[in-house]
Length: 112
Image 1 (cartoon, rainbow, N blue to C red):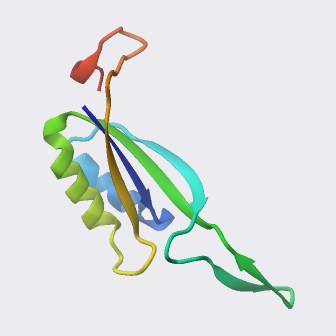
Image 2: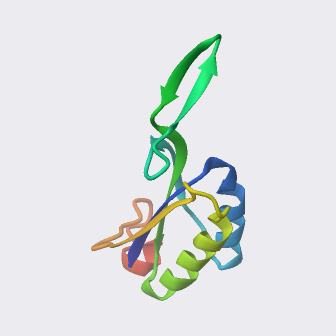
Image 3: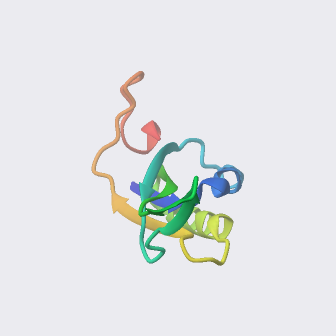
């Protein structure tokens, strides 16, 4: 089992959710986060005062999946989250040692 973590632009969430739904992914966790990479933030003007926005709003998606779905999920996220501009995000893949569904006690792939 794998945990796919993706950092994407907020306006791409619906596209990513639809793409994952089409390949059979049934659930995900979405968290509002802030961060920067190569973008390094930007400057804005507010009431005549200029200030630097260091951390930009992003969304963090977490999807637990079976090993055989990894490539399809990565491809779906990468294609649907891409805008072709800097700051499109990143995808991380990590191993999951154990998954347990609290309600039923199911473990492993059955718990996903």
